[in-house]
Each structure stands twice: as structure tokens, then as C-alpha cells.
Image (tube, rainbow, N blue to C red):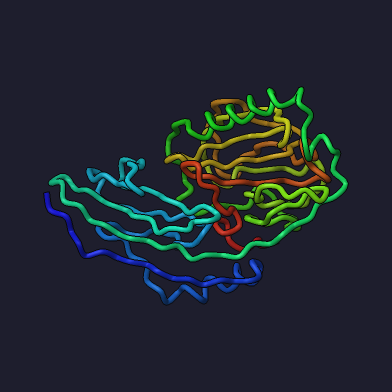
Amino acid sequence: MVIKLAKYIFPFFIIFGNFNLFCSEITSTTKNIEFNINHAEVISGFPIEGNLVIAKTKPENKVLFNNQKIQIDDSGIFIFGFHRDEESSSKLVIINSENDQFETIIQPIKREYKIQRINGLKQSMVSPPKELIKKIKSDTKKVKIARSSSAVIGDFTKGFDWPVKGTITGVYGSQRILNDVPKSPHFGIDISVPNGTKVIAPASGTVTLTEDLYYSGLTVILNHGLNLNSTFLHLSEINVKLGDRVNRGSLIGFSGNTGRSTGPHLDWRIDWNGKRLDPEMLAGPMKQ
């Protein structure tokens, strides 16, 4: 076995205080910076917290991300992403048919996040009563199973469309303080739209969950393949069934105000292998 010691190392530490400015500046900031993966081609993406990288290698190769084997499709496409708080560098290793190893060390860019206060919620939604804990645990299990399901790779390599267009009222990574009680960070993007607005598939995929959940109300999970999922929360109506194969632009359902919600909107979330990604970063600026 030969280990290729020449590594691509990507150690950038750039902090943007305002994420809205960050979205408009990231292209100009990074367009002249080359991000390479040893023994693979980068198709899209950039190493920064909340982002997804899409790459391609030879189909017969194996890919390890932080010592865990990740999926690769028949054409050699593989993906990896970065959670909200990636404190340590990541190691990507590609192993060819001769068992040679090609290593890339990646240090994602860190971001700053907003603090968001939301008041006026029912106390049961901030601190649920004991009799509902069982349902909440059951909901969590259902979501975990749906997100880990296998599915045929969709067309997300072409990018993501916005499932609705409206006013962004909540951003990825912001910590929410509900009725003055600090909670976990928000891992989606909230888009304020009238109740009953059509919600379309941002990319093709397979429906792996259609449930009425305690926190997120009527919820749909769409598996795009390679362990990449979109989740649509607080719907007023669901228009797909479990197992449906959905094309980009197809109707998923209608926006609503179900679950823990203070008004009609869509909460759109994306995850990969348990890491929560930033939908706004993947879809790009919203064009009305």
C-alpha cells in the first residue's frame, strides 16, 4: 500500500459578522481561491460551515470522510458537508483499486451567527408537558430513520431551487431564545409566505417521511440520494405520499402554520449524514 503524503490543506479563518452581507460577498471573496481535492474533481461547493461540497472521482475508488466510508454513485459522484460548528479540520481520503491512499485535510471557514428572540409562543411549545415527551421521542426516531434511508441520486448536482419565494425571517445557525428561554440553534431557513402557498421540490428525490410531528407540524422529508435530505416543516397540507419519486419543481404541499410556529411560513432544512447544512448557501440568492 502506498500512502500519498502530498496533501491539499485548506486553512482559512474568515469571519463575517452579517450573514446577509456574507451571502453577497462569498462569491467575490472565494472566486479566485482554488479548492482542490487530491485525486478528485470538485464540481461545486466550498469548505465553510453549513456548506455542501460535490466532487467526482473514479467510480471504483473508495472515499473516507473523517475515517468513515461515504457513499459514491455509479458515476463517481460523492458529497460531504460541514455542520454549524466545525471546530476541527476534516480528513478526506480516496483509496484507489491498488489500495493507494490520497489524503486531503480541509479546515472549513468559520462563521458568526445571529441571536434571534421569539416571544408569544405557548408555554407547551417552549417546554412541552411530560405527557407529550413520548410523542416527541417517537417523532425524533421517525425523522432519524427517514433521513438515513437509501434513495436513488437525484439532480441536486445541478443546484437547488427555492421551494417558495418570500421574505426570509429566520436564518441558518441563529440561536433562538423562545419566551426568554435559550434553545438550540436554528438549522433551517424560514421563509414568510401566505398560508397555502405552493411548496415545490428544490431538486428531485424520494419521499421518506410524511408525518404530523409535534414541533414541526405537517412535515415532509425528501431524500435526494447520497444521504442528502430536504425537510419541509409547518405545512398546511401534504401533496405527496411515502415512497413517491418527485421531480424538481413538483408540488410537495402547501405552506402553513402547524406545529411550533408563530405565523404562516416554510421552514426548509437540508442535512447530510447527520450534519445540518445551510439551504440559503446551497440555493444561492433568492430571485423574486
